[in-house]
Image (cartoon, one colour):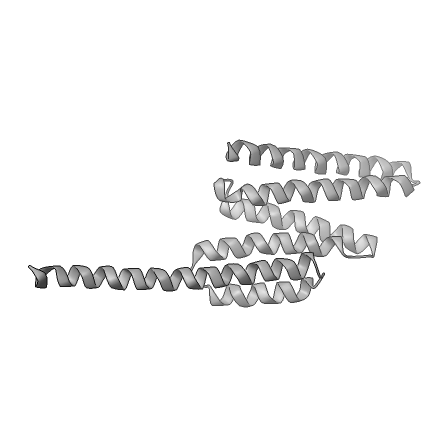
Amino acid sequence: MKLASLPGSLALLVGLSCSAALSAQSSEAKREIQFIKGLAKDWGFVQLATDLLEDLRKAEQGDSAMLRLLAQVDVEVSFQGSKRIRDLDKREAELKSALEKFDNYLAQYGRDEESVDVLKSLSEVCEYYGNFISQKLAITKDPDKRKEDEGQALEVFIKGIKAANEAAVIYD
């Protein structure tokens, strides 16, 4: 009897040790991700954060869940980076790029429970970008450009509201 249970016990022991190793690796990666987010958000080192994300992405080639998390962090880092650009035209271009990254993420990974944080971040990006466009309206003299910017601001705000509503529906 004891010999028959030995292979089962051995398999369980190997499974538990692999699980512990994966858990330790996962928690180390999560600490790195928090560090990367802090580099971008708190310190403004967006390029360094992007480079570290790329290194993590290369190290995590086979882990689809981790790659998804890294893609999520990438879109958040892009948004944080756009907020720190002083040149208004460059900031606007980066904000547009950040919105595209959010759209690409949602197109690739879908809108499910794991996308709630991305949808919440998307709504924040839309609020920030919409306010940016609204402030730009205050200094725009050309009536045609004003009308174009008003339409763009409206589209961005609506997109943000939809993202927030989707996040709320998924969360419930």
